[in-house]
Length: 333
Image 1 (tube, one colour):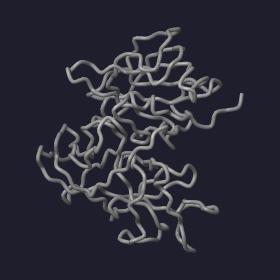
Image 2: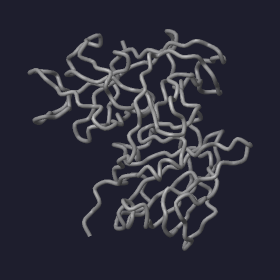
Image 3: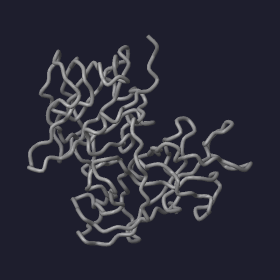
Image 4: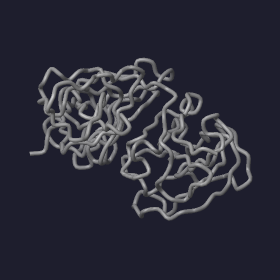
């Protein structure tokens, strides 16, 4: 059997969840979008969130694994391995699911949407991260226990990029974060959205250059507190070509390559999109500021729920509900 090169997650899988991210993680398993974090809709009655299975198949194994020790997290995490027979692109592969205390066992049959158990708050993710399922896929001959090595994931949905001018009003807060009311989801429940990037120009173009264009895809990742992020393009949305000669590319570019394409937000340069996969971004050395003061960063993801808005990661600062905020991204001096 030929090795699988990538896995497409169809809309029927992603629509079970309120939010998802391919890149918003510090762990190598997410490098180049080879794993996805799936965030179920939180219950409104205060009960523990169950974990709907992203696939159908037979549970191969469950095992308890030790997690990094954090004061806000449980001592152990759990790995659930499922031999998939659906959806079609996953058939014959093994799904790896983490951050679920399983109520299933080896030999159990599960259908897509069935509960695998209850989500656990594991030490693998930061205190500002909501509970979620971490999901990756392996060919049957691959080692299913290693943290890295999962297949690259493609999206069977086109997340809609939303313009955001960097401003908003705080509508929710936690010990380590604040959530803004912007950009607002135009059609909650019906489609996934995210913050639109600007793209364009060779890497030698200045930050204020008009060669930046607001036609990029959706930004995904922790900016800049995780090493990199991604640009999840909706169909045809990222098509700026690199022109000119002698540009400083920062990477080797072949004919027609977009290796030198910059990614920015409101003209503030974020980094350069990879030539290898066309979507991974290596962040520049930048600082995110809120009302002129540095914060840890921005949490960027795709969402279909009505509570969507930019999430400020700010354990070093306290915001109050109703505060007006302006966000900029500045180069490190």
